[in-house]
Length: 164
Image 1 (cartoon, rainbow, N blue to C red):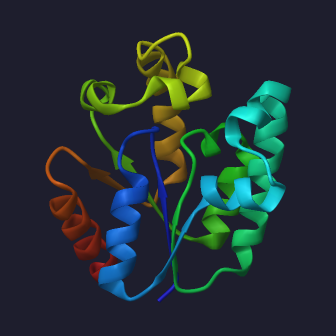
Image 2 (cartoon, helix red, strand yellow):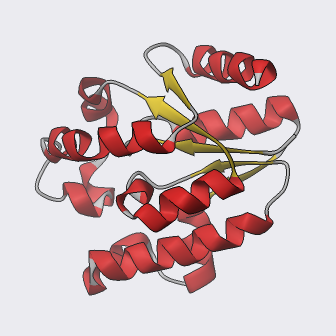
């Protein structure tokens, strides 16, 4: 089986869904935010302190590494689609699934303090959704609504992947 790449807004459940999906499919799991922090020995907030562009450069460099991943579920950062180069890379890495969770649900549980783009409050999520949603749709092979339990969403992805 090839790689499965999960994209979507921060807080949509990519990491939790990805870990469970990988376990069920007996695949490896990589959270790209964790991967790039380990690779560059900096936290995401530290990278954003330099600049968002600096972070995006590091994100793209990490995504290039994913070209070498096999049989892996990959959870990407929410803004990975902001660079066209990344969208091209995603398509080369594997099957891209957009985890679409209602922003109102995300706002209820996202920790704004740990998210550099939300330092001024969760309302920014609605703005980001307007900007990013068309890019998620363009980049994805499949769109899965995460409006139920994590298990239900993983089941939906499993069904889509098996139909292939």
